[in-house]
Image 1: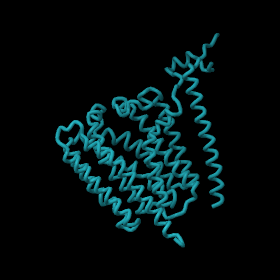
Image 2: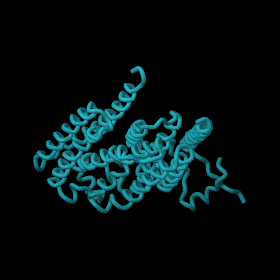
Image 3: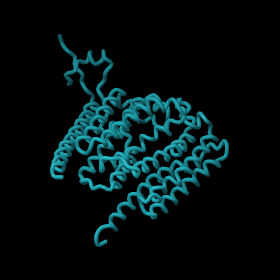
Image 4: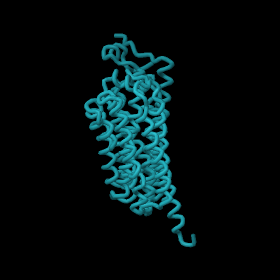
Length: 314
Length: 44
């Protein structure tokens, strides 16, 4: 029995929730969160300052919660769009397991919690950057850019590129050119990654009314732009080695990964008109995920090995 | 006047219990995190 009067509940159109903790966890977009955690961790470890391991864990945890909170706010605002796309229709809100108002409150509380935790326990510059990232993703990207311009994911990509900068700021209390290079790699990686997806999900984005590049500028233009971005990201990926932040070992790996990215971009460019299967676009989408993971792993490995070799007696 | 109250279904009760456990564990973890972080910050 509940102390809540039945008539009052029914009059207000309320119902008791059957949402589980797993449904609320799904609101945090765990797969996106894992990428955020990894890149933030690399930024934190790459910083040339020692941070207590426990504070490092707290910093990464707070960044992960902040990223998850912005995902929940995104799902709250985009519930109508998610309901008409097969890729997102089973998310907790369109599936009816969580009410939009619950997702909104959950996202707002977690946002405030993550920022305060990072500020009080680590430092306030990192907290301010996290707050800006949540605002940028939830308001600038989700509420404004996404439904307004085909450049939505180009500009909005900045939100996904901030985690290594926040990780670096958590360790050092500052922002440096090296951390901005990590930002730039993710920022330039975002358009070919999402436009490859938009190519083979063009009809779904069209039904949802989202002005993705293939729907607005056409497939041929999108293919050219994807290839152009792969050409740009190739030298930018190598830049940290050329500037002396990491060794040429990293540079060789980054050059190989970048060359493969260009090759996949070329395959998309040469994809025949009217190709419904779009295998090259799907291959590029898959490779782009591997590229980001691999280049950040190479960066992390280079930093860790470099420090180990620099130890006295090594 | 007789007040008719809400009678949660088994599924609703199970979901509420699931959420309560998750909130409890999260709060407990948060207390531990703040406690350990305070000690770390005081010692560094």
